Image (cartoon, rainbow, N blue to C red; front, side, top):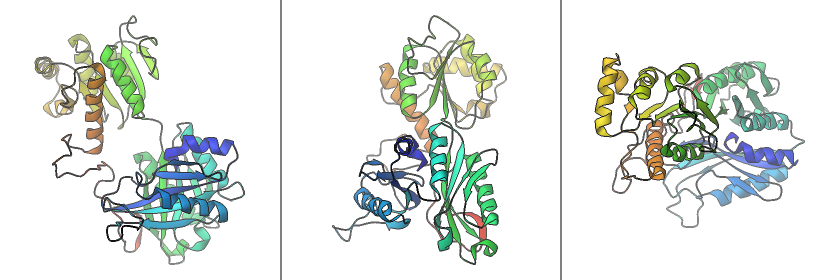
Length: 391
């Protein structure tokens, strides 16, 4: 539900009751991953999606029922080829849906509202809800923050709360959302408990170096993809708010100096559009040694060869050079700044999701990729605890 937090926060501010249907498991080819959500308010308005359209009508009705009676629901939707009137996924996969009513009188309302508020504010938090298990636990919810502070819980089960909180912190650290099955008789009465852990993190960063026309188009594309976008250039005449109104931040500073002092992580993408050796070489020398997700540099193939030779002379290793996407982007035949921005964004998405970048027409490759969830399906488990239900 945290993926539609912005819309849900408005419903909460208006005091509306609503129900949220969340994908808690997938098997085979499915358009959405665990955490994807569709919500329906008491007036019948709907936001979000759980399947890209295949089963939305049936899920909508489940949400309406949950608002009326305040009872959680779990439903599986699978392939419907055998019956033209069946409700199912035409892509051949299956999804498990958890429907949770969110009403002011419910005991989990404060927890769910706080989780939505954290996600809307761009704060790191993890929300855990029971997918299946003993009846007395099903309507519990637990919010965990990076410092270990909590809100809510699963009734009179402090050991279960502790276990789920520990797992939630690990998921939060990895930025993961998935279902987890816990098998521990001392607090599950011998019945396994499946918990959905959703994480909310601040927007990932896109840092664009070089305040040129191509950068302006890339900034818009980065915002469209959900990045917090920074533009950095050493030239104050070019790095201005008037030229980059969509940027979250504009920095006038030598690129390598800024990169050396700013915070980056494993989700950060670095796009070097300056194609000027005096900026590029010290910047890439540093960037290629940082734990960022993607590094791309603009320029012709001749520029690329010259750049890599200069970087080798500066001490950059072949392993480090292998991280560099240069010339930046995938081959779309792009010419305009907007087309080039699409090319760069496409390469970033393919790099993050494990895509090949080839046309799907005639290709025998998976349509949906996820670098974290790839290869995960709904499986059964033996005894033990802390096992990811989609491992």
